[in-house]
Length: 206
Length: 206
Image (cartoon, rainbow over all chains, first blue to last red):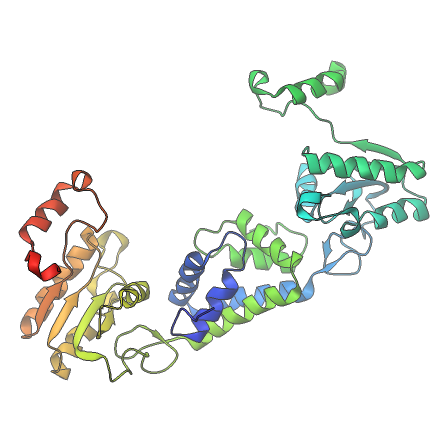
């Protein structure tokens, strides 16, 4: 591509910034000029933090969560329940579940969902390592499938369920139902149907 | 502030990214995790380009445009008409005018507009240096005020016009009128009024 700006430094910063998701060349230019208006330290601190991030972050060898060490802080924590493994799509889902403060087990980050349209098959995901973890370790009692309630999430969940069929681990999944705060009138039929079939004892919630 | 993420590297990347305009902590996290999913080289190239940008870009000593050298490529170009100086708010305006390919003169970048609400007075802008440039150089024939048609732009333009009154330079401003492609019916009265008083000879446009 032809160079757009006189300055090669600006050109390369705009090009690199525009690789970020949701950032086009116009936004990238705005960000670069914003950094130039600030003290030099703002931009260099940002640059250094990104370099450190990309060089310093590894993936936990056990659960594939991001980590600065061989094991992530969750897997390395002896206080967590290592017999319960929660299967999630991404690092963000680990953060979301951790924020509930309701889960004491460990995780397994797949790194995506099966999606034939996007060309993502089971081999690109951490599914084999999950099966290995359940089979060989032998000390996993329950695998909780905590994937999105989308077609990809359900497909991936079902695939994992089948793969784990060879083992005698208990496989559960997140409850599907009416989201807290949602109006019954505006809840779609599938959700409503599943919230009916999956109804729970009233006394369990009080 | 309390640290939000287990990883200090992630925490610092998110904090630095969220200093960018329009980027909150949620977006910053999304960007950081996106970089982690890419090859390591993407993030480090971005980081290095930002560091190089902030360390390498100077401001032209003549027109205050961004530059990698003492003089920007426009001021250093002997083919440009150095007797015509176009006064603009920002570096982006220089780019916009350069893109028209209609202007052969040089620029003077103010670095902002007078705005009492934002606490920006004439002293924070490159106005004194403009007056100096016109007065001392003695080889400027025309100053074109090319500022936004907003209250701040008009105020700043008028202030500059008054300051340049001490000199015998010709001061002009961008034509105000109906924007090309705009419907007359939906053009506001002030613009329409100014396009009438500033009407040009039809023969000049053909």
